[in-house]
Image 1 (tube, rainbow, N blue to C red):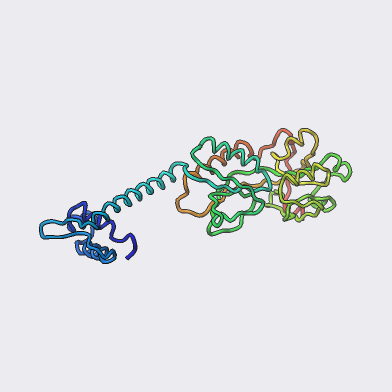
Image 2: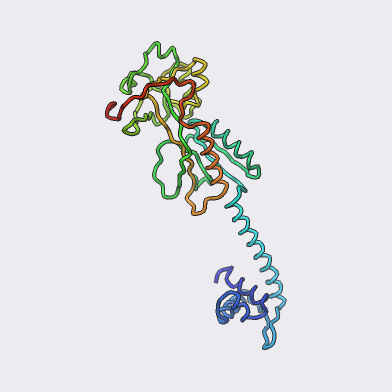
Length: 315
């Protein structure tokens, strides 16, 4: 017998005034009610009800237990109501993990706007260059980019995408020349993250390129500093470099082969019922990215003639 067994049966017996009434209310047999009541009394080592052929009355222990049962039932009903509200309205705490490599400022700005719409939420926003363990570390959601690994305990929603471009300072390109294709990147100092991987979009799919360079870092701000310092070429999102390009401090390699369209994902633990706070945040971020960061050609990107190219062309 578990700790909760018999409680509903006992409460119904008292409220209906008989074993028969309780059995009819719960849709079970009278013998089942009697068995549950006997098991309760044996567990407590005390008689809870006095029964005669005419009436049933509570003992002192039974009266105390009945009052506590009513409190427990009310608390359970309140908890059930709260859980229901959480599924339909954003309440409570919301822990979000951002990818610290690129775009934290933009995602954090979007989440701040979401917070203003739902001030009843308590938000905890962290930035990591590693992929956090959502389940073990108690995250409700995380933002990740690019290709995702298969997972049986996580779910992903596509938020949108943005473009990455190769860029360098005017002095660097004047000194080393502009690469005219992926193969020519081997003769350049390529600044990158720990994976030392660059990605390029083509009609045949995504091209993955292992690059070499003397500047390796984990976050976008440090990578940007190296590029602005004239150390080499970097691959950065359009929204990250816009002001620097407009000011003439950076130049984009505006050939079609040098671009990559990267997808942003919302990752969350697998659950049959997605909470309202996560569901609404995903919807908000999707609309924000579509409006602010969708892969449109910014004004500082010159118009380029369409070009036919494929993965095979660069291998």
